Structures are given as C-alpha cells and as structure tokens.
Length: 270
Image 1 (spheres, rainbow, N blue to C red):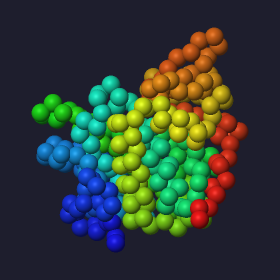
Image 2 (image 1 turned 60 degrees about the horizontal axis):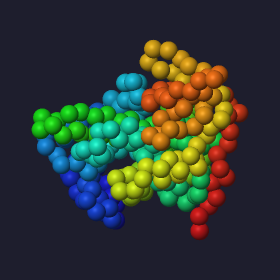
Image 3 (image 1 turned 180 degrees about the vertical axis):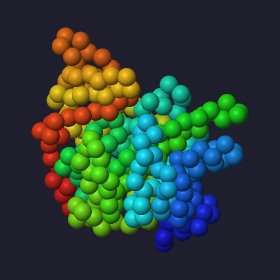
C-alpha cells in the first residue's frame, strides 16, 4: 500500500498508530505548512510531505534545494516533552533518520552522525534537519522537525561534501523513505518520552564521528577551535580548549577530512 497520495488530504500513516500525514505535490515549505497547521488548531503528530518545495530552507534560513525525487517531510508535535528538554530533539531526530536510512537501504551502520544532526556517508552529507518552534495562543508549544533526505540528487554545498543514496547505489523512493522514517521517529519519540535520555545518547555516540578530534565550531558571532571532547548529559557539545571545557548548544561544526573518516561498511541485511 502506498503511504503517500500527494493530494493534500490528511490520512492515517499506515502501520504507525497515532500519526497522520498530508502529502502535497508541491509546497513552499513543509515546515511552514506544519506551523500553519498548528496555528489552525491541529493537535499534532501530523506529517506534512511535499514532492517538491519551492522555498525550502535550512538552518539560519539558508535556502535548500528541493527538486522532486528526494524526501521532504516535516513532523508537527505539540508539547512533545517539557520545554527544558526540547534541546535534545535534534539528536533524537538524527538518530531516527539514521535508523530509517538503514531500514530503507537494507544496511546496518551505513550512516554516521555529526553533531548535532547531520547524517554522513563516507564523510558526505546526505540530509538536512531543521527544528522550529512557536508558542500557540493557548500557551502550548508547537515544535516542527523538518527532514530533507537526498535520495536521487544532492545540492552542491559550499562548506560540506554532499551525496545521495542513488549515487551510493541505493534506489529508494520517497514513499519508501517516508514509511521508514515515520516508523522510526514514532519509536524514537516514545523512547525519548518514556526512557532515560542516556539511551539516546549511547546510540548516538555509537554512530558519532569526530569525538576526540580537533574541530572548529561556527557560532552566530564567532568561531571557536578546540577538541570535540564528547557530549554532556543533555546532548550538548563539549569543547575542550587548553585547560578549559565549555558546552555548546547550537553551532556549525567542521572537522578536517581525516577526522570525518569513513562510514561503517554498511553491511547488507538479510
């Protein structure tokens, strides 16, 4: 059964209880459409999917190439966890997408994770994840997590190498990719709410690149250089500079090529 009908109608996500999806052939931005749905009173656990985006965006409002053939999907949640824990969401989302990529490609450990939520294969970026939040009129918080996954093509990025699954030898349709992601994020969201966050951190670290390596962290107003010493209990990056350590909640991280290394072999399942 096809999961995505691309007619804009809201349907239950097959096999994923409690989640709904509305797929559109074209939208300006799936994140914007999800935030609009929240403003109109949607109760959440709603996926907005687009075959193509005309004004997709990445972190810090960077434009994002959104031509047909890739997966563009945003999940609307309402108060998914207490506000103090929202900063953990990027790691939860990245881990869910990494697990979904293994499912859709039939591999184990193909994807590595670069803090906080970039997916890499052999050092090349294959996805983008953008979280946005807004307070609703009734005092609740709408949190939208947008996923862009390079299935058949990828943009040329100024700061990163990029890749797509087709170019890596994996032919995956947007429908199949969404089905894997919807199931994976539902599982990870339940664990995030009900189990210690340390479980997420342990799984994230197993896929991590660069821990212990020199890094450059680009913040909004400056850049910092040091050693990626690991994650704190909330998933924030710990940067070691000389005899001091500091935690960083958000920023762009850059490694040299050797630190990124190669992904795990990506063993075929079966």
